[in-house]
Amino acid sequence: MNIERAALLPTIEKMKQSGFDYLVKITAVDYIKKINVIYILRSLEQNKDEILEVEIDPTDAWIESIMKFYLGADWYERELQEMFGVKIKGRVAKRLLLEKWDGKGFPLRKNFVWNKSYDKE
Image (cartoon, rainbow, N blue to C red; front, side, top):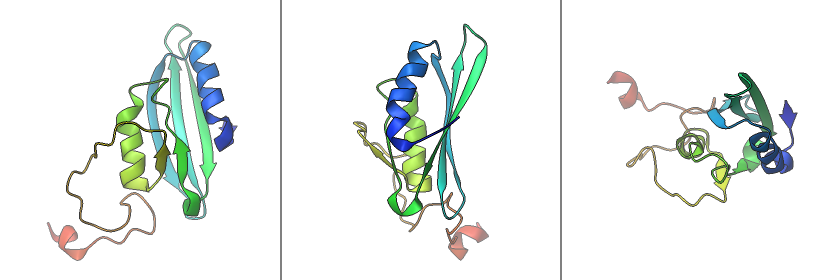
């Protein structure tokens, strides 16, 4: 289901209330001119999955945190920030995945250029 960025939190809240009690994954796909942030939710009782997609502009890459609904979103939101460059608004936890990343850019973006010293290792 494709949703607008502004509808993310109300939609997540509605899904949680309707029995989607488990967050399977949050990830993203970089299409160069757009980034789709993908949420996979599962209802264990109904044995059903739902996939939500939010399209965002890479030059204005931000999304709201869903940690108030699913604490398991912590790791995935950190990955979105560090690997895709998607800022997470409303995030309380500030810990990084890559504690000492000294590179430039975001490794899971299509325009990322690997340093040759990384390629040789």
